[in-house]
Length: 443
Image (cartoon, rainbow, N blue to C red; front, side, top):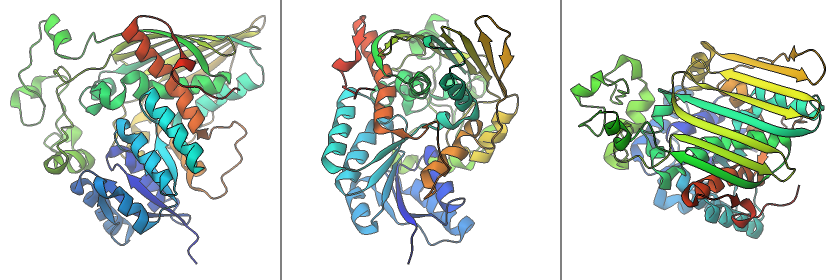
């Protein structure tokens, strides 16, 4: 009797590579991939070909998005993995549950309050389970900070200062893709910062109550470029010789040795004929509707306050977070070795990040001598976080998790609540009471 859990994946862009490889490689004794669903037959065919040629398996059954229900009924997955465009996550989460499946969703769980509430209602109605894949929780450096805070090394937490900067390779990539459109991604305060807000919620063990934010498009987009005296005549980079002199040049047709990843060409360029999706839009185009410069203030239910900033056009990439308590201060500094672009393999991501990666966690006791905290090293992308989260997701009996890193739908909503409240605050120019948008349970 086959005891492996059955999985189907909806959304076969670059972000699904991690789950696809995990099911077919490291966890093949416990997991079986029984279906793929996407808008693009070309993308699904690429994945299915990998299963046949690299893993010597039968072709994976493939379904166009309109046939999602048929896929679930015919292939009978136990779990549906949702890695589609952010604005569609709720559709597949809810429908999978209605059809009797549990769900694993890529972050963010969704992009606005109405969709969060619809997911909550579906969970209550169907009794199904939803996990949100917050891999940063599993990064050893983030876990090390969680451990020292839980031990009370700095006493009762009072304040958080968190600054994240994206470089002009990784940061720019959000402005080439569908993420540049707020109605599809919720903006960087939802799509990207949901990671960061989840970490803070987890570190301080609380949920947000009040948010005030400011945000602008200062660097990317056509208007910002024209203010600097820059003018671009091309909407995309591929196929335009003059674009090759642009420092943001990013072709996806395999013509550049620097960007000649199979995933770029085969998942995106070759799939344009059936997906209609252009992966390499000019970062200074009219399509950009998200912010690239953001500042957020948050008060939490436990009265901790946070200053947060996110900038998407810096010369280096990484973050600094300082958490101050009544007995000291913990400071975490991380400089990433390279940018991350969805679609690179786990090995490529890990190798890129290892080049120049700097991680430092230091504790400053209130009346004592500062000391550094040793950070364990784990192989894998996202600082080793991907390796550990995949264990937790796919092993039938995962290792004990005293840090409570497994994220539920409540955690997914709590992280989003900062971002969607910040978006509302930017729009209205006023502080936002989070419970007005989504009511989370007491903690």
